Image 1 (spheres, rainbow, N blue to C red):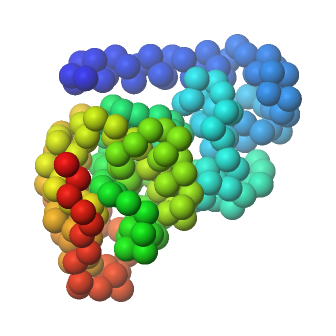
Image 2 (spheres, rainbow, N blue to C red):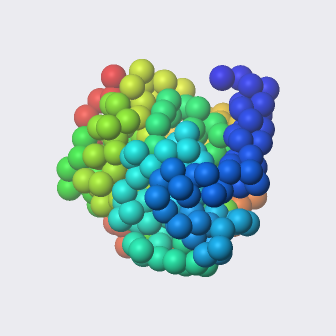
Length: 244
C-alpha cells in the first residue's frame, strides 16, 4: 500500500466510523444485544466510544473476536470498566487482523510506532512484552507499540493472550513486516516513522536497545522520551530464532 492509498484508506475508516456513530447506534445495540453504553462512554449512547466501541468499529462492526479481558488490558484498562473508565489510556488499535504492514502504516499516521517481532511464545517473549507494555503505558497515547508474529489472525489472537495481553500482536503471514523492517530474529525491535517508513531496527531485546529505540523516536519524531527506566530491563540481549 503506497502513501496516497494509506491516507485514502484512513479517510475511509474515519468516514465509516462517523456513520457508525451518527446513524446506527440503536440498530447495532439491538443486533449485538448490548446497551449503548457498552460501546459508548455515555450510558445513553452517542459521542465518544470506549475501547469496546473502537474494537467494534475497527473489526467490520463485529464482536466475533472480542474478548473483554484481553482487549481491556491492551487498552491499558481494567476489565468490566464503565463510562469514562473505558477510554483507552494508551494508543489502542482495535483491529485484530492483518496484514501487519497495513495496520502499522495506519497507526503511524497518528504518531510513532515501535515494533517487536515475536518468533514464538516463551519466557523471553513474555518478559519482553511485559516490559514494553509498561513502556506503552508510559507513552500514553503519544506512541504505539505493537508485536508482530507470523501466523493467522486466530493464531496471533491466541499468542496475544499467551503473552499476557499487554500488546496487540498483528499477523504477518507473508512476512511483509519482517522484510520491510529488516528484522532478522525474534525479539528484534524496529522504530517506524510517519507513513510507515522504517527508521531503525535493533538486534534483540535489552535495556540498552529499548533505550536506544526510545531515544530514536524522540530524535526523529519529536515525541519526548517517556518516564520509563530502561535499566530495570537489564543489559542482556535476548534474541529468538531466525524469522525467515
